[in-house]
Image (cartoon, rainbow, N blue to C red; front, side, top):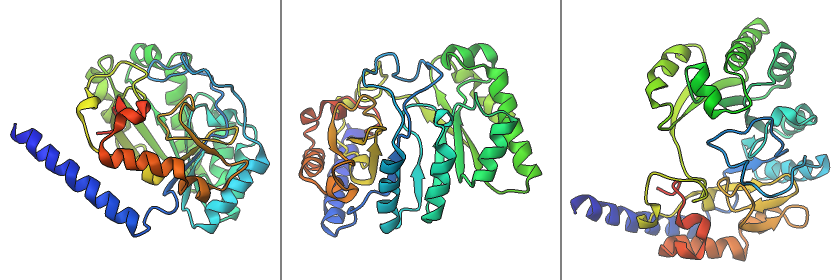
Length: 301
């Protein structure tokens, strides 16, 4: 009862604070811009939604990418995330995209499964000036990892991480920073400590993450429908799919809630547009039923 009372007070405070900050114009342009340069992938992970994703696969046109980066540069965005659904290293234009962003004063981050990051690719990654590269390594054994990251070989990934670290040192480069994420599930929680011991002191960051249900599409462990906290993603993030469609957030893997298209509109117009503002108002009022993907989403704490 006491816990529920404190949570209720926190929700009221959060709604009021977000509303005030929005009124002061703090959320005029996204803090996090995620550009899905491709949604093509060579894996089929059990923690992902590829088996149920229905939208088409493709790679972003370079002209559209430049338009996005140019607007981000005008608004002094520090980082662009070059990932969403898909394996970024399958994008043949990836290094050209990293270079263009750097010309515009923007650093880049990406998530990779590291399966393609052999020594030749590692040298290209380090030379490109990529700021951060991360991977989810959801296991500390071949059996557990390959049972989750289907289509990817554990020994190959471990070797490729070591290779990237070796090449970075050899080239006397501080970048890219290398981070690993362990998405904890009932299948791998017993290997968490071993994972940390293996990589601590070798990579630049280790993060233990909780599994979530991708906006209610996969089985979850919580009952988010009881939660009333507004999700800051709708005030701070911007997710562009490879064809220019703008999804509500990174949880909207299938583009079910589209708020615009950057082929026809600017980021600023979409981010401050009527559709997204209406969704924000629903979050502030706790009316998550109006946005089904938000109603059951475990990422909304």
